[in-house]
Image (cartoon, rainbow, N blue to C red; front, side, top):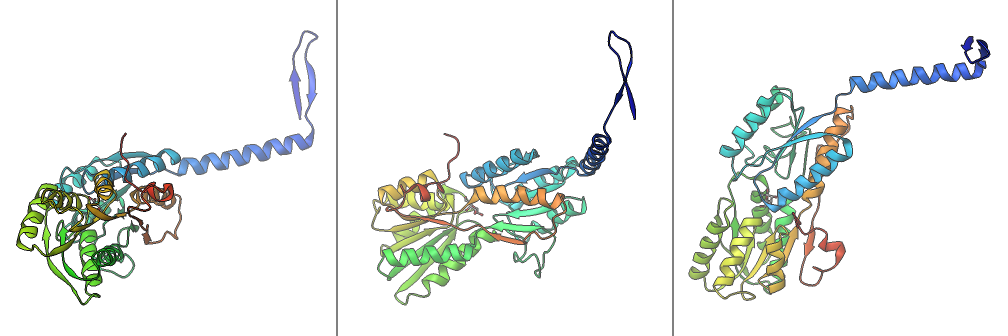
Amino acid sequence: MKRWIADNSGPKELMLPKRFLISLFTFVALLTTSLLAQAQFKKPKIGFLPGVVDPFYQVMEIGVNEAAADYGLEVVTQYPQTWGPTIQTPILDAMVGRGDLTYLIIAPTDKEQMIAPLQRAVDAGIKVITVDTFLGDGDYINGKVTFPLSYIGSDNVEGGKIAAHALAKVVGNKGKVYIQNTNVGASTTEQRGKGFKDGIAEFKDMQLAGEDYNLDDAGTAAQQTSAKLQANPDLVGIFGVNVFSAQGAGNAVKSAGLGGKVQVIAFDATKDAIENLRKGVVSLVIAQKPHDMGYLAVAFAMADARGVTSLPRRVTTGYAVIDAKNVDDPAVARFIYRVGK
Ligand code: T6T
C-alpha cells in the first residue's frame, strides 16, 4: 500500500511494512467487535427499595452505592417512612411506573402481601432481587415463589438460636424470658422469633413469658416491655428482634432501674445497642452484614445483565456476635452499623 506525505520538498511515497498493516487491521477488527458488544450491552438501572428508614438499611444503602460506583451504574433509592406493605406497595408501583428501571433490589415487608405487587414489577420487565427479607418461604428454586433472581440475607432462624443460647448462658439456664417482636408476616423477624423459641425450648428450666408485636416502633416496644416487666417481676431476659424492638426493650429496662438484672439480647448493631452493651443493659449484640447484602445485590444485577447464569438463588451473609469483651476488637467492631458521622 502507498501513502503520500507532503513537506516542503514536495510529495513522497511512504511504504508501510506488511506486518504493521496486518496488526493494524487486526486491531481495528477487535475494536469494532468490542464496540459492538458494548453497544449491545445495556447497563442495568437499579431501583433500591428498603424496608424502612433505619441504620440497618442505611448501611445496606452504602453497600449498594459503593457497588454502583464500582460498576458505573445508576441507582434510584426510595425509603418507606414506616414498615409495612401498605406503605411499601405504592412506592414500588411508582418505581415500576417510571419505566426506566431494569432491576429492583427490595426488602419485601411482608412475605405474602408483597408477592402480587412484585409480580407486577416482573410482568413489567423488571428483574427482582430480595435482600434481608424474602417472599413466600424464601426457597426460590422449589418454593411457592420462584421469580426473584436471588435472596441475599442472614439466616434468621440461626440468629434467633444464637440469641437464645446467649441469653440462657447469662441467666444460668433458668428463668422466664420474653420476646419483643415487630410485625407478623415479616420473614426475618418471624424467623428470629422461631429460632429463639426453639433455642429456649432446649433448656428445661426456662420458660417463655410471651411475645409482643410493636409494629417496628421503639415507643410501643418500650411501653409493652414496661407492662411485661411489671406483670412479671421474675423476668430474667428479653430478646429484642431488631433495631427498634431492642431499643424499646433497652429503654424500658433502664427506666425500671433493672439494667444488668434483666438481660437484653439485641439484634442489630446500632450505636444505641452498643452504648447499652457498654452500660451493661444489653449483654449481647448480634450484628448482621447489611453492607454485604447491598453490595452483592448490585453485583448480582450486573452479573445477570452480563449474561451470567449461575448466580446462587440464596446467599447467607452471616453475623458478627458482639459482647463486652470483643466490642473494641477492630475485626468485630467493623460490623457496628455506622451511618453518617
Ligand atoms: O433487623 C433489620 C432487618 O433485618 C429486619 O428485616 C427489619 O428490621 C431491621 O431493619 C432493623 O430495624
